Image 1 (cartoon, rainbow, N blue to C red):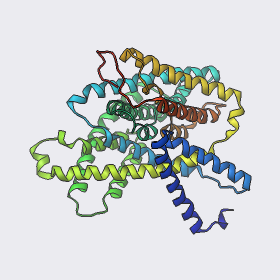
Image 2 (cartoon, one colour):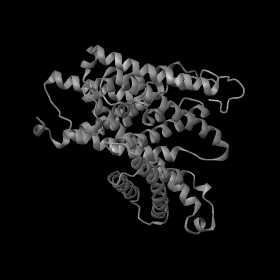
Image 3 (cartoon, one colour):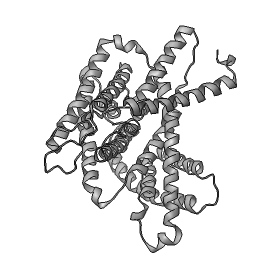
Image 4 (cartoon, rainbow, N blue to C red):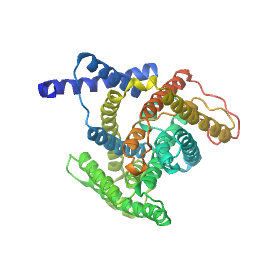
Length: 406
């Protein structure tokens, strides 16, 4: 049926979808309903409409993977551009890092246990590979959902989600690179981190020269193409190339920390700052575009039949309860106080979906129902919406002695 669709109709649909997504963003600010949830709902509604009208629109898996990969790079770059490093932020960064790390590890281990119980006889490492994407907080959903929070709460959640993304992706790559995990593979993993940092330093310097000193106006997509080539090349060589993308964003956003005669000679601080503002703007726009199409397509592919599958509901419910429980326990231990609404910010989204599509055959769980993935993503988005709606824009009193007041 696609051969009967004209180019004008495709163009109309694409632009209409972007307009609707923009309206969803405005509606989110007014109602605090996550725009991602509305995009998923739109995709589900379009699927039901297509079934009712008899019009079928097959979505190639490669298209979903392509959008997810581009979105992943944009998310990591956007996270780096959003993170500000300074001495007075060290307590915030430390607390965000340990919150992301500990909650991620505890959640992954508990969810792996749930999956091994639900699918007996499966290797624990395979269950762990499935649990890793489900344990990563989605910065693509958190970042647009914190505008109404106080500055401290907003920064804590942005740091935490960004760090959770990076940690989760690195651990996932480690467990899916080789079929058998040996001492040699562990040694290569840590060696590759060092190699990636060295490459990152060279790439950051080269890209900054390109952006700041080049007279060509068409610089962003050239820079982005370089980052994509580095990411894909790194994947082929089993290097954690996302570190390069994150470091580039951090360098651009924290250039004032890099002081010295050499940098002052080649880079004018004002031009670097202008470049940083430009990159933030165009990266946010690009992320918005990718997020729009990705979540609508994902919603279109959701099979609502999982609501009738009791096993899916039980396993999915246990996973969501685990995510909430681990977060509640850790935040209580760290802050000695019930943090609100941070407890509810547990969304799973683009990175979770993308990593599920990247699970290799030798790590597949026999009999795993994708309805569990759909359930967890929808449930955690609804929980975020609940916390956002219940939160009042008033500072909350916390007990003295907390490292950061969030």
